Image (cartoon, rainbow, N blue to C red; front, side, top):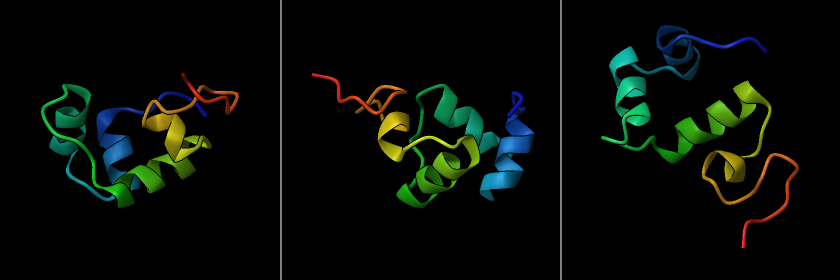
Length: 61
């Protein structure tokens, strides 16, 4: 998948683009349901998005 703009990701997730900006700037964190949607959009695990595992599925120590 090619890179998405904040507006494109917001539309796919179902939030306002300003919410994506707040997530990217560590002002706010997405709800669990949005993390699940983003994991599906980017074809990665929710654990990867949360920084618990690497891209290959290995757990960080």
